[in-house]
Image (cartoon, rainbow over the protein chains, first blue to last red):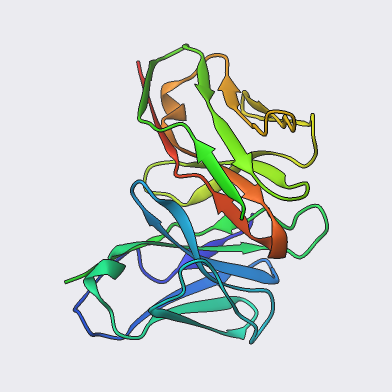
Length: 115
Length: 111
């Protein structure tokens, strides 16, 4: 089974702190994604990566950055956390194979609270 | 751009009732369509998919048919169980391997 793990299930940080959210997948997938999930808004794509050291902005990249130094690991960075970044963060991965491009496998999520 | 609209919840049903969750989409080209499910405290899981018009996706008793003429992909199940209680997301696969999600529909099934 594909496994996508996220470093923390719950995280509490203070305004202005630099925050790192880590995601690791064990299935050698090329594509990795970071979403945030908010009530009434569904899932919104923050950043994605289709290869090591490659990244592309999603729909809401402001206030975030990402790092992908190894194929299995994709990190989301909040440079200076703010209260409006309190949310559930979901990581996903998918293989680069025709017919499976959109079958994303999700981690359990990190619920981040910024106070 | 691409967008997905699904019926707002919450939806509350009794066990063995019939379920329909409506989903319509706007997209250019010929997108793939998906239903994902999120059980309490977990990430999303792919429930079913359809990649071209008139395809029917099915899994665990759930079904959805890709209707190009009505740009719809409604989720149905003939007899729901308590264990089906979850949030259901309709999604569209567009360009650059990205998924566009609907806002989600919370389903609660009571015994």
